[in-house]
Length: 154
Image (cartoon, rainbow, N blue to C red; front, top):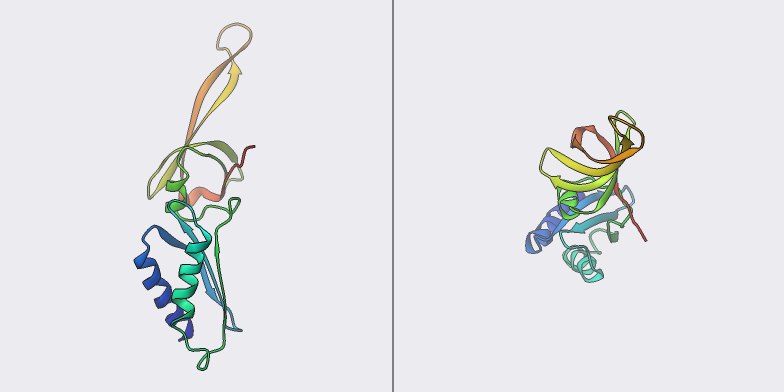
């Protein structure tokens, strides 16, 4: 019952701010509310405050004691939603597949079923000595991804 009320308040807040979306939401046994959000253009502290106030100001502490945490998905948090992939187009991802293969490349496409990674590799020339740079790509369905993260480069 309490979780349903909180979820309704969260959905109402996110309907006002369509640039924000839920990554994770849970209400623990001790009434700790945990909300992790992300945004199409990132998340500011003000965005977390907006979601927090939308929930907190519409619950009665006399009726239900609770604690509330609203946080943004961190830069190194795994990607779990299509919108996260879409907002990271052009960035380098490290993707581990369910076959335990790790692929690192630039995310060039993301639709609702799959992603496309592209990268360059050095391979032996077909004829003669030496190596040649070739462009590679991998189309990976979301079902085949066990973990995907943005690679932070300095």
